[in-house]
Amino acid sequence: MEEKQQHKSHRLLLNNRRTGTVSGVTDVISFDIAEILLETEQGMLTIKGADLHVNRLTLEKGEVDIEGRIDSMAYSEVADFQKTSASLLGRLFK
Image (cartoon, rainbow, N blue to C red; front, side):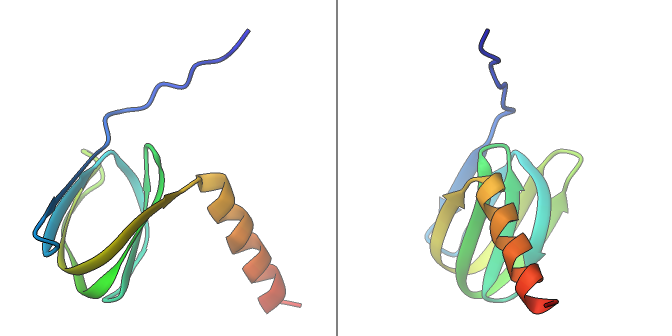
């Protein structure tokens, strides 16, 4: 029997590559002025750009507002991100 995964609503709204709202966020992994890494209901979301800021963070509602110059947005699987993090940490502490 196949198990169906139910995802909460995930939405990404981008205005003129300067501001954006992301819903369906389960965790904020990291953020700085060049990159924001979010765990969402649909996988890991990497946002790259310049002068990036997290203006509003409401994890209870799963919403994040961002601003800055947004150059790229890319999704990856959470499992892929965890493998990469583990191998990086393993190399650092050898």
